[in-house]
Picture: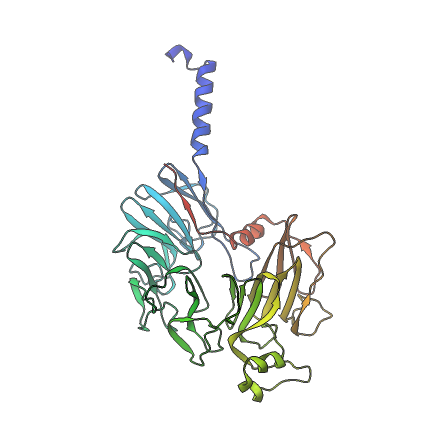
Amino acid sequence: MGENDLCGPSAVFFLCRKFMTVWHGLVDTDAICGDDDLGEAHVTRLYSWGSRLFSTGDNWLGTAGTGCCDSFDRGLAWIRLPPVRAAYRRVWAWLVDTSRGSYAWGMNAGGRLGVGSAEYTVDRPALVPLPCPLISADAESDFILTAGGWMVAGENTFGQLALPDADPAPRPTHVPVPDVGVTVTSWLTHHWVTFAWTDGGLMACGHNACGQCGVGSPEGRVASLTPVMLPPDVKGRVTKVAHSQSATLIVAGGRCFSCGSTQHGELGLTRPQLLEADPAMGDVYASDDGHPYGACAQTPVEVRLGVTDCAVCDGLTLMLSDGTIYVCGDNSTGCLSPDLPDDVVTPLSLPLPPGVTPTRAVVGPGRVYVRSPGGWLGRGGGEGWVAIRDERRVAGLEAALLSTVVHIEG
């Protein structure tokens, strides 16, 4: 192309093709978001162009990696890093593998990022001193898979890191697996409890004051990975674990099991069911309607069949079964129905608008959300179902269901 062709058709075609190539190389990674009630999401997205990484959206808790934590969208910003290979979404943080090591930034509560800093937020990429090459990172926990095995950093007060020592681990530390030959494939950590998916079944450790680990132990602290005591006739792998501060729901083989505290009926279990599972609960106080106030199930008890998805938060439980939403637990705000009691012990079907077929369920304090092919619906505060069209709230709900990693092309 000669200098006289700079404004000709061939030049226009060349520039357009170049522009399209640049934006074709921008790979949208997972969003990171969420707040206490899933109502006003803070969302940060990462993009790649070749081996360079960019962020856009909120910089709440330093998730944009550009310094100056705030919740304002500052547009597309370049994150200064060596050539990037992969980006892993974590809980309010990112872990990025580069040609010169691994870097992390975002929320650093208890030193969970493993960068050696005690600051609550790390707003720029900081080197993670991994002794072995990074393989992957778990999105729903602080565990990192390296060529030398799983590693983790942060606070371990309740044993949630599966480390025998209760002291914090400021740097990535190797996680011992108690059974030789057992391989951990993924993790979930929430409210100081950790669940591990292994080829030998589901295991747990951490805070167990209400039996929420489901390991059948009355100990308040489970310091090492221990098998979750699902019934021996359960067929198929565990497909979902939903966990709140004191209650756990487990979906396996199309069956739903629950353990932990049933203060508001969130386990979906009546007193006879609990007594059948553990006769020692005979001295548990129960009201006239059979509500087992104060009871704790230390081993998982079956709630119902046919469950494919579930969610639990602050005493409120949702279960999705055969296209129907079943609910139980805390109804003090009327989010389930103003006509139901404050505590719903037995799971009840929640009527949906005509033509709505739910595919996923999400719950926040006093709020219920379902996703259908037509979009998101929500209800709370005694109101009926409302279509959610706020882009920020939709982004928050969608990001809560995202996968772990996007590999960088090029």
